[in-house]
Length: 142
Image (cartoon, rainbow, N blue to C red; front, side):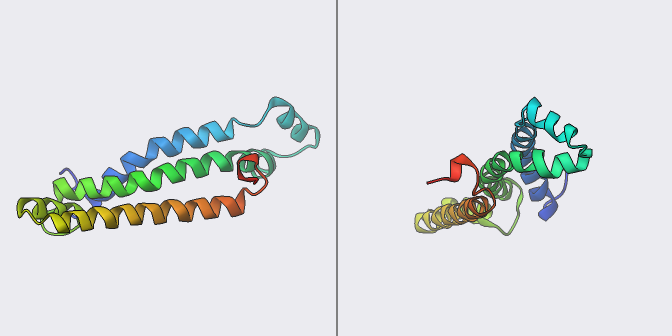
């Protein structure tokens, strides 16, 4: 309600919901490199940014993608819930709310199925991008 009833309020809810899973996963990924790997980069006289882009970021990619996969589904749920409570006329949350009030359960289930399909599509897209970018990681090997 602080941000009004326009899209900014929904975006604020989504940002708050996805910020911490992304932060925790990214920090965990950036700490994934061992001291020996970092020392080797220093031995080769790599700058901070070279070490970051060639060692720490590739090691963090699996963690970042895990955070993205969590965040895509959380963002969808957050947007629907934000619309459920703070949208006067539009959105899936509003449509679910009004359809429940009208006992139009077919519309409610249609919205739920569409949300599930959209969430699965978002998750699958991130998983495909992860598979193409982190093909070298043991979690992606067949």
